[in-house]
Image (cartoon, rainbow, N blue to C red; front, side):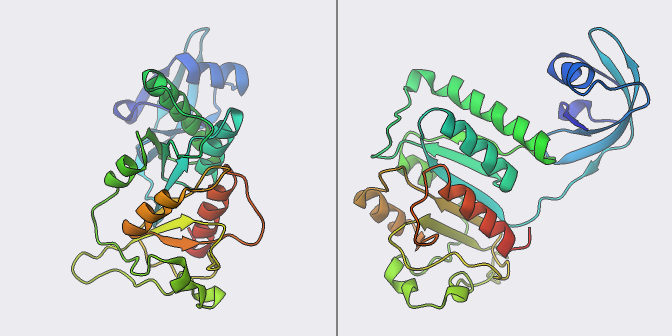
Length: 273
């Protein structure tokens, strides 16, 4: 079993856990003295621990030395439009499970949901809590960050400034490539920076598939997806100008919460991470 602790608390020795994590151990998992627990700090470290005492309001553990858990490249970022109701919750939860490292929520022109600026911080905090719970369930040592952008321009402006390798911004440019070559056509890391950034927009009208079996050459991948009504022409244009490649996920129409999940899962499978 696994719980999250504050990074400053993840040191060898005795550790007293209270609050939600104590409730999880004592009431949900019904642990006993002597049970083993894995501690993670949400920032990429973990440590083995053994329960030494269980009280009404706290659990005491004997913690061994912490160790880093390296993230498997590439870093995968998902730009996801706001989705209505529980489907947004499910999308965030599953994105964490399949391997997204960062989730950026933005109000697409055709999104049914438009987040009130006065409620944005509280809503993002709730989504971050969902990501934390999903990270614990799926065995991740690092909790993906969930952030909100005021609009697409703000989301794009916050992307890493490292070299972009998406030299073919139009979907038609990739349409002629064989299915297995869609990602293989992207160059590898440059000699000057040692990094490679790939930007992909999920466009149902694109004939270029996101294929499996492609060697993992990128260290940073950003995917952008649209709402149920699709990305507006102006949004597609802005993404193309930002160096995004248009790729499709097959002939079937996927829901707004499904498309980014499939894309992240395929990227992880393609890069064996």
